[in-house]
Length: 96
Figure 1: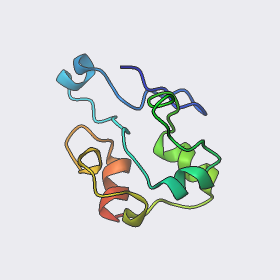
Figure 2: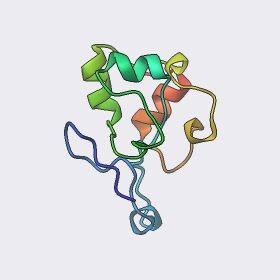
Figure 3: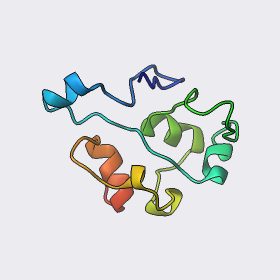
């Protein structure tokens, strides 16, 4: 799956080959609808799932603020893990 950030073009979901080499670059996450809409994104619907992605940095630029744990719903994709970028894990955990 390719999940390119629509603002900067970075791949937010690295493939298995990059993971095998130890990449910690995944920024595949979900935020609450009101956060996504505040960033100027379209509300997700079944016909548009998986088309629009933003890396954490571009989402924060659009929002004009740093993400906090309250921005992320409690769903499995939002659990900190070893493949996530340090930046995503820090936002999920509320660290700087």
